Image 1 (cartoon, rainbow, N blue to C red):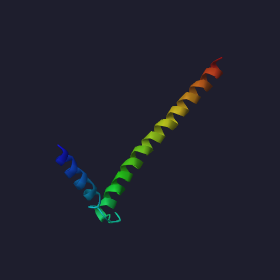
Image 2 (image 1 turned 90 degrees about the vertical axis):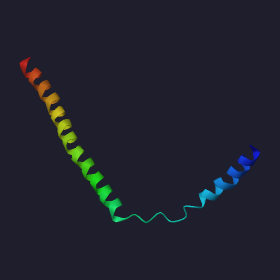
Image 3 (image 1 turned 60 degrees about the vertical axis):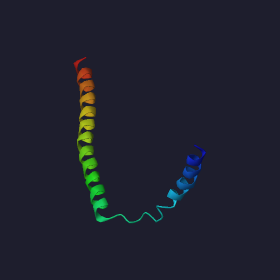
Image 4 (image 1 turned 180 degrees about the vertical axis):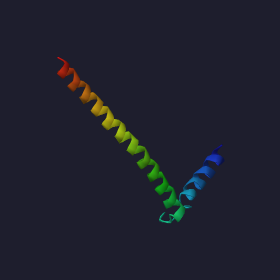
Length: 70
């Protein structure tokens, strides 16, 4: 068991140096994926904004109708 612990103690720090690099090698497919994701998010925001504005108009119109009826 002690040998296994020693072996893991030697191997674990060595794997930290395996990924050396700047990480700035994003290809065109990464940017296409992120752009597609942005289009989906914007496409979901437009109906949400329309729903909220309709909800606000509905709430305010109902209060105006009630005050006129009194």
